[in-house]
Length: 192
Image 1: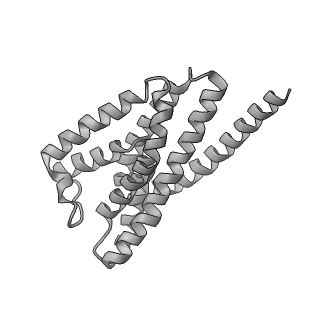
Image 2: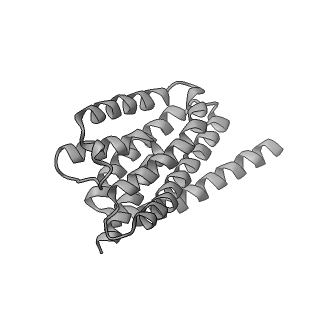
């Protein structure tokens, strides 16, 4: 059971990494400094105050950069692999000692990196639709939703991990359908 809860927490944190790379890592660092979370062996660095401060600076910088027009679209190309790496690390940091090192890393890469990559690609598609339909005017709204989503999902991943996974799956299905519909509407509008 502990392994399943660990994976659910990892999936939630990985999904949050898909929204913003540094927000979930900062939440993990704060939680470990407060004694609410103990990272796995090898990830004790998350509980260092200097790391927490560096993650706070990186988080603020990342959030601010997404409010600069066109920089947000450029950041998406960098953020996709970074989100997958952060999702893998977040999942590995919360995995339990019940699995072998190989199984832990394999599940972290597949589940954590895959979840972060899927969420990140959805946000890239959403930002693309926003840019195409509004000329980028709505991108700050999208950016605000993304960092708030990253914060809320990161916190909820620790509080109600199973619920986060269920809601995350439902949200991903809804988001993919919404983006497809919007792209189809844009394509139909261009054909007219």
